[in-house]
Amino acid sequence: MLKTLINKYNVAGPRYTSYPTVPYWNNDTYSLKHWKSSLITSFKESNAKEGISLYIHLPFCESLCTFCGCNKRITKQHSVESPYIDAVLKEWSLYLALFDEKPIIKELHLGGGTPTFFSPDNLKRLIQGILNKSVLAEAYEFSFEGHPNNTTREHLQALYDVGFRRVSYGVQDYNETVQKAIHRIQPFENVKRATELAREMGYTSIGHDIIFGLPFQTLDHVQETILKTKALLPDRLAFYSYAHVPWIKGNGQRGFKDSDLPSAALKREQYELGKALLTQVGYHEIGMDHFALATDSLYKSMQNGGLHRNFMGYTASKTQAMIGLGVSSISDSWYGFSQNVKGLESYYHLLRENMLPVYRGHILNDEDLVIRKHILNLMCRFKTSWTDDRLYFSELPEVLIRLKEMEADGLLHITSQTIEVTEKGQPFVRNICMAFDLLLQRKQPDVQLFSMTV
Image (tube, rainbow, N blue to C red; front, top):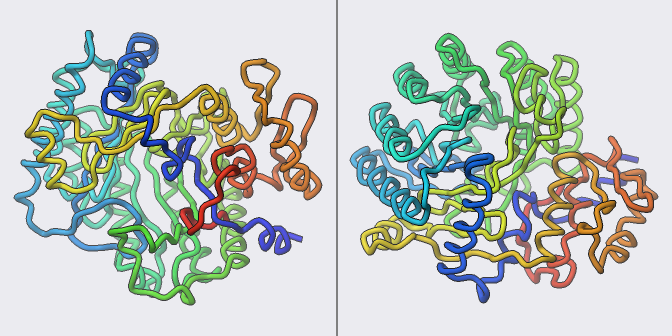
């Protein structure tokens, strides 16, 4: 039965870190002026009440991992660090000029690239430059992505000193054949060292990222990786499907053939095996592709209904405004999205001209805002409703018709005013969200834009 469902629902689809999804942004109605206006409105509405989130993209890596779909610049020249930090702080100053009060920072995340490419002193300078012109929320959370091979005690200490208490390490898979295929040679001992160092220092949430569906990966490989993970017992885990999107310009996904990848059925088996093993250890499934121990803030957030999803993935708290700094970063005012230019040279040039380095975005209309709420509800709580009249929309009857077959397959329950995803349907939540995605339904793409849902 599971294999039949996989064959039926394994289609290309978004991961819904936003709605509308990036390929459906309307750049004709977007402008820098509109973006600034939407962010100022959001800031005035929410800063004093909940603060803002910051995502800072640090794009440099010393070597290319061939599974990676992120924006990155490969170099061994660490002279690039200081100019980049200066540019990010300049961008931050341009945003600060829009506001009539200091931002209250509730959440800050360093992503990449490889944030630990930067020296501890430079990372500290970056964060201090951000914090010097802002205020910390009472319950703030700072996190960063660390590479187990190069995250040192000095990195951990420098970031701990400026408020970081959460770190996530990219593990992917411990098998040497898989690691060679994705160009990420990373012994278990390195992950163990980095994890234990963070614990000793006082980090309260340590995460590992594990990927299934990688080239040459077998069920035995997944089991081996989960069992080694059990020995370290990180507080939370991202256990997600490899997104094969080699058509994206600048992507590093090469070095293996499509035929080297596991089939959709095997990928699903890998997930089900991993989920079962993680559950046995005491992890709880959080939303889509995430697991956490009961002591972690992500689990507590799911329990109290505070789980949120944005361009950083699942987060333990929601802020209406999220500002992305650095090349390719995406910002979210709730009423609009804006993405920075992807090239370093363009990024530096625009900042020298005292311009925010954005190049595309989307201003949400009333319909977008309603659909966004439904998709967030489904992704974060596996249910949504329109008991509030403001969440009813004219095309809802058509959406329910599209969902009837999924209901017949046992993936969800529909009542007069609610939809609830079943446990059987949770692995297919992306497909369920696609039924609500009016822009996708109105204009199916001519070419593949998204990774496969299974």
